[in-house]
Amino acid sequence: MLFAQKPLPTAIKQQAVLLGEAVCQARKARGIKQAELAQTLNITIPTLRKLESGDASVGLNTCFAALLSLNIQGSVLQQSAPALSPLPSISKDKRNEFAALLTQQGLFASDAENAAWLLALTPQQRLQAMINQEKEQRLCGIALR
Image (cartoon, rainbow, N blue to C red; front, side, top):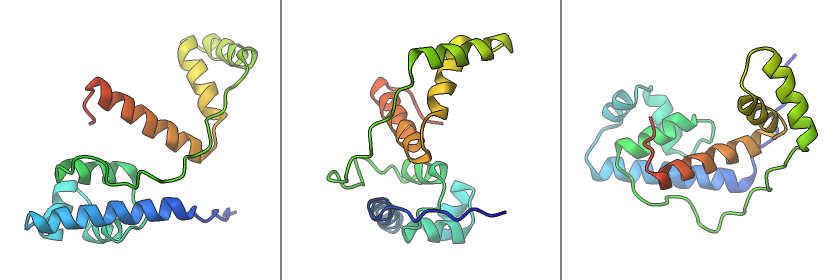
């Protein structure tokens, strides 16, 4: 049984278009053909075309790889984009309960607490958490791979 996907919010679609435009402009400014960049990124030309046209279905890894490969600095996204809803918190009792279950199975309690927190998030909130983590890593000087 297939589940219907909810349409993407307009703000996300707009940000995907801005990202695609930045990648396309940087590629052209450097005189790089789509085939060359696609090969560098280890993706197909149609996937690169989707990225450059602002298709939000292109994977986050591909987007990051394109930005890094083209040495795109600074924010290519609108600063005035509406903030996503704040991330929820889980009660300490629930986290401890979940941590105890996972610890019994040989996992570390801190991993269990992180997993419990992640499971409480919506997909959009998980994406925001990944973005926040990437920003924190960048501030700390941790390189992306």
